Image (cartoon, rainbow, N blue to C red):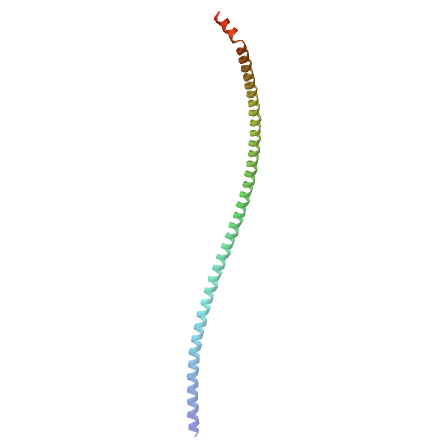
Length: 143
């Protein structure tokens, strides 16, 4: 019986050794997996850091671009205001010039109309005088 107990203990001891060896194998594989996961985690962290830096750079570039766009918009608005003021000033000048030209032309036309009426009136007077004295004038011309 002692031998039986001894044999059972040996069998159990051998079974425990096998279990310990399999646990040691599993533990080794777990250590390897943890090391690989740590390496992957480190690589992912570095990739994330690079991407974060790229995002920050692109955001700063976007900010610069938006600032330049706002500056250009302000410049364009200022140029538009200046051009509008210049156009309005030119329009006022042209209107004043047109009014002065109209007044000048009106004056000239008035003078021409006076001369026309004077000439017309003179022609009527000459015609009337000639019609009344036509025979007498003809006799003077023939003699």
